[in-house]
Image (cartoon, rainbow, N blue to C red; front, top):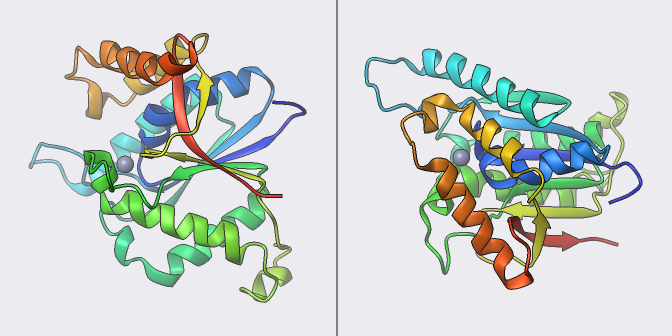
Length: 235
Ligand SMILES: [Zn+2]
């Protein structure tokens, strides 16, 4: 990938991008590309201890996410302050916020959730309503709204001009057609995922799990360790 690209990650929760694209992010940072991460929620419902409050979980998970971003070399992490589990009802505000984000960040490449996931795989990560909601709103923002000056004309007064994203890589997809070799960055990915202690701290097997998964994705192409995406290109 050359020359230097601007890459934006748009995901629902802390850890989504690290688990599904952390190796690619670490590799691209190493290659000199600039990566920003926008996370819609702080994952404030993501804890099994009923004595924790969502506020406490949010603080914990934000700190874990910032530590993981530091490990991968992500330049900036922005939280958009939505509540965990509520994105499916966030409506037009979510789409406008993501349009504003795309116009402000002006990325060459966006990673986001596959909105059409859930069929035919029905795998658990794909069934999370926040993942689907972010995927739908992000593709709506990227394909239709961010490029059209008649959408949100007030943005122009803030200096936010239309922007066309050239490449979208969808995570958690059932329709992987693009892989990235993460053999050299896999260890960094493991460290970043490990930083999400509240999510993976009790799983002693998670490194082996991540390795087996990366081997499975790379195997058909003869790549030792890989991450896979559904890739959408725009001219
Ligand atoms: Zn998630």
